[in-house]
Length: 181
Image (cartoon, rainbow, N blue to C red; front, side, top):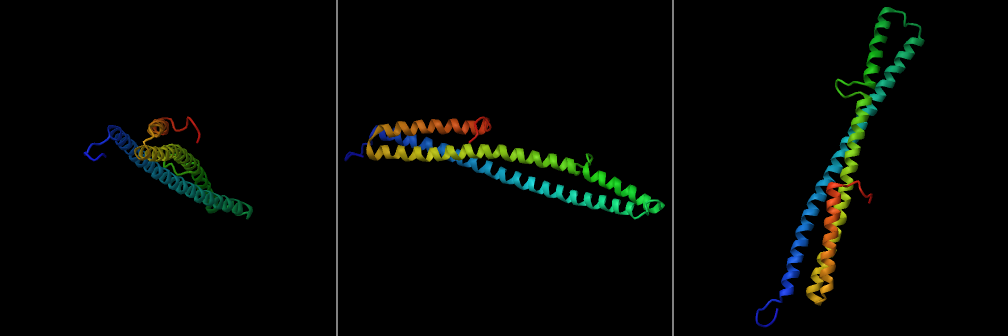
């Protein structure tokens, strides 16, 4: 400011540029954190589903082992044992696939893979927005440096970085798998 309380008009433009860049940064950071939360949520979901899958595998293996042991013992011809073997065999098959409840190994694996795919998609989105946020931070510093140094090229660079961050944000939101970062 000069001694007459006059503000340099170019500084007003730079201040407006900084405000716009800061707004974009706030939006980018907010979306980035939301995507990061979704990544963590889907990772936990996938881990839980794989744990359930492992539990079903252990139960299936134990049941099949019991069937084989009983058959080898020579007691399979006993009517009570034969009925138990049929029950155990049905349970072992149910552990492998149970479409009615979605809790067979086959269904659990499919759900876990879907959770992992969703997690990976949100991870791509998160990475794009994080990079865009970093670029916006640099742009704000460059725009601020314009006021101090009077070098207008810095504000042009800041504006260019702002545009680049918008492109990256757009890719992150609408086409996160187009480019692998």
